[in-house]
Amino acid sequence: MANELIDLDAFVAPDIQVKLNGETYKLPGDAPSEIILRMTNLFGTLADEETGADNLDRILALREELSELTLELFQERQPELEDIRLTDGQIIQLVSSLMKVYTASDEEEAETDATRPTKPSAPKKKSGARSARNSRARTRAPSPSSTSSSD
Image 1 (cartoon, one colour):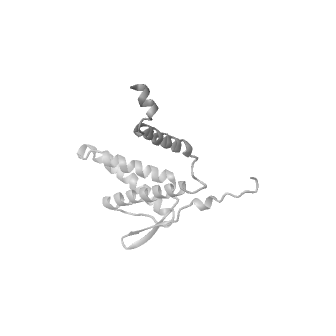
Image 2: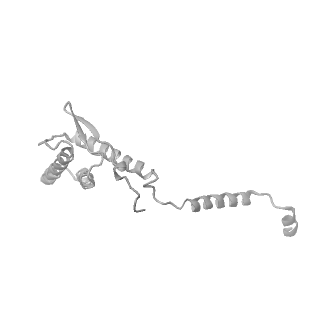
Image 3: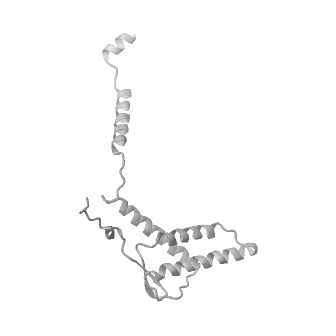
């Protein structure tokens, strides 16, 4: 095992391209999980917040923090980028699309031999086989010896 090479680069998803205001930007296929988790959390918090004058400052602060995280994500591949402004609709689309992409990427990785978790598949087959045997036993016609002894 000392000479075995585990290629972790094989698990890095390709970059994602997004178009904004006529320009194409790249986002990392291996985006830092901290950014994605914080974006998702903020997105959910914003969706749950009640609108109104009493809550306006909190909503604006959450929105600003989400914008800063979005810029940070864009700067992963465009470090020279100083500002990125998205409309609310664009942010909603970006966050939901990124979650689909990153979730799909995680699911695809889980399906490879190198990352597939060990699952006890035998018990599932046994329980399925047992269920099938039990249902056959219940639907099987009684044997002549069992009908004569019970009558």
